[in-house]
Amino acid sequence: MMSLYNTLFLYLSVVLETFPISSSGHITVMQALFEKFRWPYYVDENYDLFFHGPIAIMVALFFFNDWFFIVKGFPRTLPYIKKIVCRGFITDSLTVLAYFLLFKNNAFIPVWVGFLITSALIFSLKWCRTSPPYCVWNYRNALMLGFVQSIALIPGISRLGSTFVCARWMGFSVRKALQLSFLIEWPISCAAFLKGMHALYQENKIVELLQLKVILVMIVAMVCGFFCLRLMQRILNEHCEWVFSVYLVIVAMGSFLLV
View 1: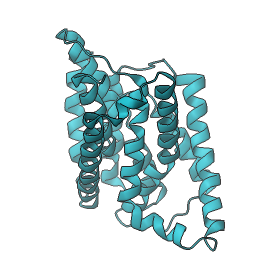
View 2: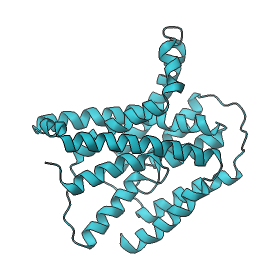
View 3: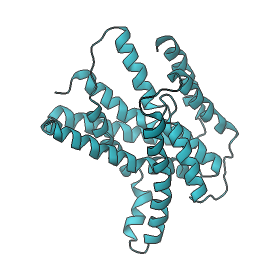
View 4: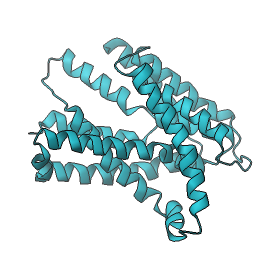
């Protein structure tokens, strides 16, 4: 049975994923806060994996107009799809290898340091060109984003923030950088969702997913996340990303005292 705390953590994990502020870092700080005040909580890791499904759906809906032409033009767009898949495979393979070989169950730096790193990365966009030249999704860019996404496995370093900043400095426009950042995460979200569903099935907890509370949480999280994505894109288009940078400095100071 999903507890109130479990529901809260899972809802926030979906909504926070839409901002470049590290959802995993925020969850770590929240858990430390609950422990400090001795509030009981329990977050099932399999539920956390399962809730990557709503994230994948939310992202697909947000970029529907950008991605639909690929499906609509099939098989004419097959060569284009192969390029995306092959280069995305390189990016995500580096991330998966880094997770199992280096970062799994290891925290190399305190979470507040990760927040400060993300803040500095986002603030660097102040000097990034506002009208970047045309840039292509090639193997060099795939390797670079794979490396950056691997580093972002450390709590406090935002995956979205770091890969978006990296893509912007490569020369991608705001919209393309945002799209690419979510595109390289999309297969991982789908895989996490399937792994979580399989684990819950083995634990005979699938029936819990059909409860009205769980369904409502998923729907509300997806709707809120969708509009948060629209808000974030507007902030980025207006070059006000410094808002996230300042926010992360404040969070870093709070987590330094807490964690």
